[in-house]
Length: 363
Ligand code: ADP
Ligand code: MG
Image (tube, rainbow, N blue to C red; front, side, top):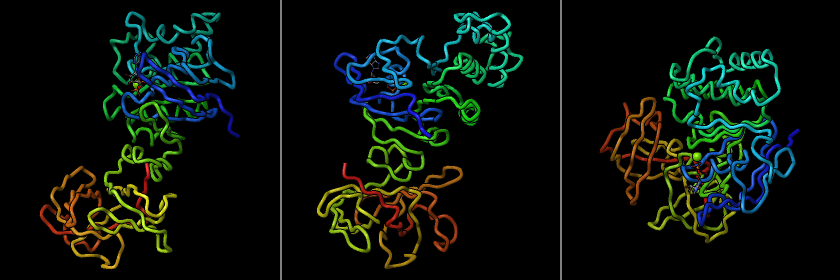
């Protein structure tokens, strides 16, 4: 059973003349891990600030547990925030940083001690109660910030790029830990990041934002495999785009003509009518690369010359200048039987891909 816990309905938020959120709607379900993903300035923090009650919208509604939150001050909302710059109190030790929010509640010293200890165990910081923030590593500070928000037992935890200032290795480790923490606590996490990989790793659902608007919301797999707009596709790593005109739908799929005379195929036209202009896109990792055509009659078979090879560690990227003009990028694409050894710069090659991997956008 799903049950909305936070809902934004047609929310518009302006700062002066600048529209930070434009008629924005999103329903967050109780207990889910949802990520707001978008480039800098797309409105992610603004959403968290509206939910937390630090800002009020000019239009639309924010509902928390089905109740209109307009006029509710932050401290009565069943919501807590972990900020990117975790802003611990430097003059307080870990215990008092975490206990800070509890001091406002009418708890005995023993109850406070007990709750702080339990939450420090949960974030795997036992025995660090007496340390000061200056004596902690970046990862430990982040755990204290988490503990400080969790100790109040909110129904919803808002996390604004909480891993942004950690180095790569620690960030990956904290991603896994946060996900585990979410699974154990079963509270709702609204997590913000501009990193698509982080969003995919962590979330039940991802909401992609662009200039204060919701582009698409869905599971990581839906967003990655079936982006609905060109913006989402680009943000999720699709690199090859062709401007095309669609031919009439046919049994063998959707035929597309580029301006310089290439015929490309997609499995289906995403609802676009014949004659429509659209963008056909394909991921670098969907391309197969070979020195001779694997099947000369295959659809989406293009000839070209490798102009650049980039070694990325586990994979390679090939930039190919197509014979018909334009470039295409392939990744991890060395086909079996494509030739001995990796294909290098200057070689004449063929790329091809399955029409089922073509994406069609009309936006
Ligand atoms: P994100 O978190 O996705 O980077 P924000 O929600 O912080 O984006 O900001 C969205 C837009 O609103 C940005 O263009 C930003 O410059 C603007 N903005 C945010 N806060 C303010 C503010 N207090 N005053 C003026 N403009 C703001
Ligand atoms: Mg932000």
